[in-house]
Amino acid sequence: MELDDHAEDLASDLGVDKEEVKDDLQNLVEYSVPVDEAKQSLRRKYGDGQSGGGGTPSAKDIADIDPDESNVTVTGVVLTAGERSIRYQGDDHVIVEGRLADESGVIDYTAWEDFGLEPGETITAGNAGVREWDGEPELNLGESTSLSFDAESLDVPYEVGGDAQLADLRTGDRAVSIEVDVLECERRTIDGRDGETEILSGVFGDESGRLPFTNWDPAPEIEDGGPVRIENAYVQEFRGVPEVNVSEFSTVAALDREIDVGSDTQTMAVGEAVRTGGIYDVEVVGNLLAVRDGSGLIQRCPECYRVIQKGQCRTHGDVDGIDDLRVKAILDDGTGTVTVVLDDELTERVYGGTLEDALEQAREAMDQAVVADRIRERIVGREYRVRGHLSVDEYGANLDAETFEESDDDPAARATAFLEVVDA
Ligand SMILES: [Zn+2]
Image (cartoon, rainbow, N blue to C red; front, side, top):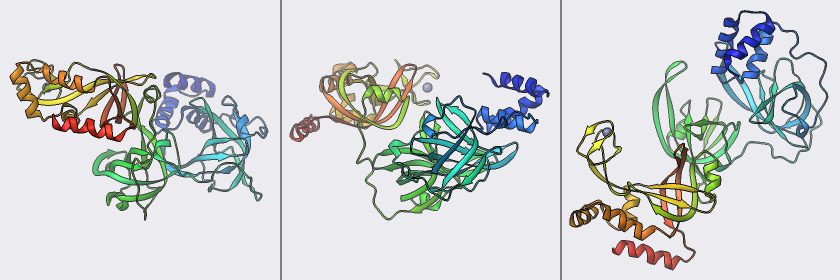
């Protein structure tokens, strides 16, 4: 449903001006208030007696909560409770998000009021709102919820706290705690909602992999680099991949242990990786089926750096191209295919020579296709282990390789293959 339709619905239900309702609704939705919650809150604002009424809902096990239900009463243990600031009707408003568990299951919640929720506490939330997110139910604890802290604590088969590994983080995760190394970090000035503000952005790594981050309130421990423990971070999608958000409510402390970044990285099936729609850091193993056109010795536009054909850039016309090396190769593991893209350094390795060598070979043959041919002979039909950034668009899946190694259980054979490349 469009925002306009929601506004029309509300306006006719509440008997108020549609434009007014629409402005309010737009404002709430822009600041990431879910549309259902925004509508509920406007119903309250415009005095619709129906919302939150209708008697006390019955107590439910978490596993039995249906996304279509409107209100429930639940008892559970607060596993995580993370504060986050959103702008709500023109004012900054602190909400608390986290997970609640009972013996039967776990559910995400958002608390729109300050109930003082702390991890480990057992609570009963009477008349909690239910909304659907991505097919799953979530709880809204708001004005109409009666919340009590239970003296008797509930025993649940889930760990209290939000400790997580980077590889397990998904968009929408809240109140997570991570122990990471700061691999890249830069200070940037952005146009924030309160004017110009400085933030840090970069890449975190842990044993399971790497993820980009934004630190909205620059923490010196992050800017200094090195291992840190971060509590109460949240995860949002940015440019197609999950991104760790470290806010003013997060705590950051230097960590007194080394982190062996990437030591536990899991290899994923190609099909599974492609179905995620994009992963910042992934490793796949597959057979190299073909080297695509546009590989080997290529020329780039000096203005936009895009690959050009016969000295012609699509945007900049007749240009003096810059010579470069790259490979676009098709990798397949039976579950799916990706186009692996090798940069100039990795291409020099698989070619077995430098850009100068490639230019000389092309000059001698009076044909630059010989460079791609030599790469083709060396890599097609072999199995490779590739790690890098995966992106998926309408044309297919591309894996920008950071490492590209022949996958071989026999280290001696691998060493020989490497030596062949070096000798060539
Ligand atoms: Zn150009």
